[in-house]
Length: 169
Figure (cartoon, rainbow, N blue to C red):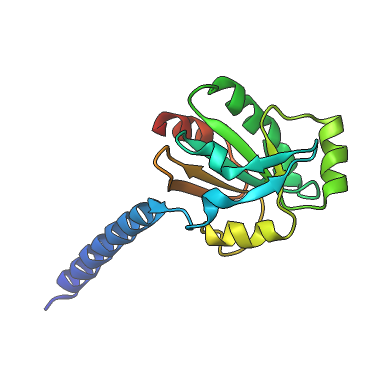
């Protein structure tokens, strides 16, 4: 066996492995939500409750954020614009992984056009159950109308991410 043949064989194997990993990541993202997801309820900053059961049947962009998270704050206007631009097709929901008082004060200064639930520190566990193994913020999850997780992103969303996600709906 020549060195060239060996290198070509290793390269081909790596290509097949890379394709397999890519397919695994894609198929792994199309999985059902945790069984209790649609039963969850969160207090809303302005009063009342955010019922996850009220979100069924429409594609949803679920975003975990906090007032102390600079990338979260930077992406909120993008999410707000996405909600306006995609009204009727998509719904955006924010879950604040934060204490109620800072969230209420923040939203008084910078209101959002989508519902926000107060997830508190329990939001980290929920985010982990949705695929955020690191527990970092911001974290976004795209849920299709059938209730399957289609896409996830840890870190700030970009206009390109949102354009791609809009096309999926």
